[in-house]
Amino acid sequence: MVSIIICTYNRSRELSRTLGSLSELILPAGLEWEVVVVDNNSSDSTRQICLEHQAKLPLRYLFEKRQGKSFALNSGVQTARGEFLIFTDDDVRVDRQWLFALWDAHQRYPGKVFFGGRVLPLWEKPPPRWVSQNLSTLTVLFPHLDWGDQEKKADIAAGEPFAGGNSAYPRSAFGSANRFSETVGLLEQDAKRGYRVGLEDTEFVRQLVGDGWQGVYVPGAMIRHLHVASRYSEKYLRKFYMGAGMALVRLNPSRSATHQILGAPRYLWRLLVSTSIRFILTRLFCGSKLWVPAECQMAVTWGQIVEYRATQRANPATGTRPATSGKNPN
Image 1 (cartoon, rainbow, N blue to C red):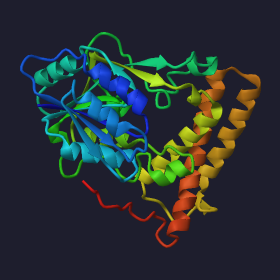
Image 2 (cartoon, one colour; image 1 turned 60 degrees about the vertical axis):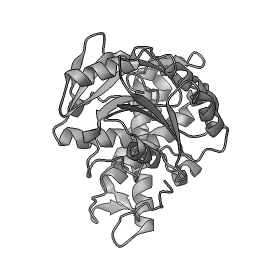
Image 3 (cartoon, helix red, strand yellow; image 1 turned 90 degrees about the horizontal axis):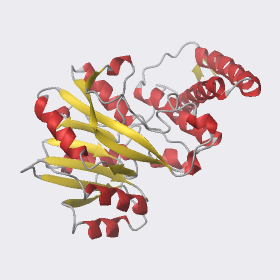
Image 4 (cartoon, rainbow, N blue to C red; image 1 turned 180 degrees about the horizontal axis):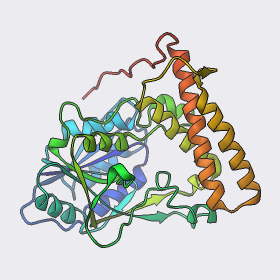
């Protein structure tokens, strides 16, 4: 059995379009499958949309009250019945061969192998030039992945990550030690401050690779990912990459109590100065291929400093945040 897991929050209109594309999938003969929609505490018509699509899909609706994508992902994994778990987002359109291609690859690669597919952009409006000219730099902000038409093993450790919205894993990948980190994953308290502290899927894959798993790129498993126009701004870019910097600190909580200035490691303050100068100069005098990477690095660095300082304020004795808590109502 295959389980397709979708986590969603207040995107009922886009979710409906995603579910509509799933209803047109070409299925392998005899394959049993389900779609698990995890409603992460939405206040819109998400539940009603799911009920409407149950007429066309083997859809199961799950409500996760704790705000945060990692909570929703872990609840979805726990609830799913499948031996092969496929993850996608609530704002995609899947190709009709998508499920067929992933299942076929899973059959041909037994053992400790996980999969990722092609992700093509679906722009709500034509993006500004600084976005279109720097897609290779902005992979995390605007998810896309196209490694061509040939299946290949991915060198994850060398910087060939899959997109979390088009990834698939055998059930055995989710052992007792492997789950999505709940210290990150778009938590409610971060969202209120305007930050998207993610990287939960990147950290999960890092754990798998460290445990000897291999990633395989499946070109036939194609989706189109919607990129909304509200994200085509430098303000959104800075907030997004600040969140990435905050996530890096949370996912690597070990820290030294020495060589700090104002609650953050001294080297980060030096890096912030150098990246800020580089950004200002390139923004004034150079093209976007220079200033966009500089702005991303500056934002990541500042995000790390912000998180270190918040951690220090939360627990000055140990320099660690209190553990995230919350009872799972499911």
